[in-house]
Image (cartoon, rainbow, N blue to C red):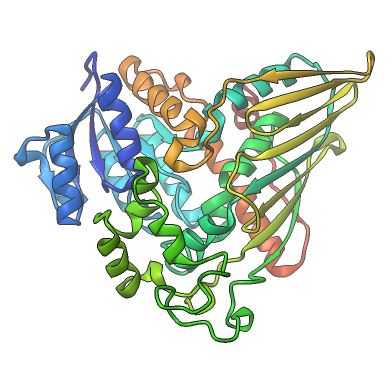
Amino acid sequence: MHSASPTVAVLGAGLRSTVYARRALSTGSARIVAVAEPDDERRELFRREHGIPEENVFHDWRELLAEERLADAVIIGTQDRQHLEPALVAAARGYHLLLEKPIAPTEEEATRIVEAAEAHDVILAVCHVMRYSPYTQRLREILRQGTIGEIINIQHLEQVGWWHHAHSFVRGNWRKESESTSFLLAKACHDVDWVAYMMGGLPRRVSSFGALTHFRPESRPEGAADRCWDCPLQAVCPYSAKRLYLGCLGDSEKEFWPLGAVTRDATPEGVEHALRTGPYGRCVYACDNDVVDTQTVSLEFDGGATASITVTAFAALEHRKTRIFGTRGSIEGDGERLWIHDFVTDTVTEVDTGEGADASMAGGHGGADAALADAFFDAIRHTDPGRILTSGRDSLNTHRVVWAAERARQHGTVITIPSMTKQEESESNA
């Protein structure tokens, strides 16, 4: 199936799928023609927004994929542990795949998905949106030009945001590894992939340290209630759900996210009901979370170059911060601007990359979400996987670094990453 304007079916009409589908709708770069979503209200809202005919609306992805092929591609936005089956079936049916990261929670499942896409010759784009941002593309261009010489070290900081971590990784869907995946894979497979992209290849050795340091029963202040709504400490608690979610009202972007994950009733009464009865109203020290809240990964590359990645809850939700040290200069970046220090002239040049100021999902990750969607729809239109900045195999390789880092953290070891084949190395450096 091929058309000038590619057609897309959505499996799981959650927040991430909605972002990509709305990009298709606003630009006309693709047409959303079918949806499978178990939540009745969400499914109906999605159907109306995209004008999907009733016969192409399904409760379960299995029903959609059981039909004669309905579209050129699918967006798979199901929960992390529900990626494998729909990806395998869709690939076998000839659908191109836009797959939310991570590929899958385990290396075995992720490998099966990538191999299925390759076996059925369909495009697989994993949503490593960081590669697509204007900031990333400008920075990589500068590095490839040799502006700072050979890269010796990268220091990279991912500021999850204190309230974002509480929202997603303490109260939300990614709080328990058994129900989703590790914190590093869920939140920072982006960052490991990004650092490898900057370095132009995979690391050879990895170590990691991290723990659940704060969001534990032992840290609970005296007098704190089990739920935030009536807690006497809400005025002094940085993680007050009542303050956070009531503060979203009246802001369309914040009502979409994070409030959209809490309730679709964007009124004070709707927020109160959700926080009194649902998971997002719980005290952060009285949840069933077990994923870490801070983690550092150390990487060693061929030739001795090194990198460190720190992912922490205890910061403002802002763009990633990165320092890159080379043999002829250094670069400091704040996610929007770059400061390039030339060692020969001992001068600093500032570069504005044109990145959007909002690094959160509400702001489309500084424009990266839109760029990823555009690239995927363009790749389908031209049947050209080269228009995607990371192949399924590339993404699998950087995911393998994440799994190795987790093993290193759990066992207190340094792990050697198996070498790629020559073909994989060539593709990763392309």
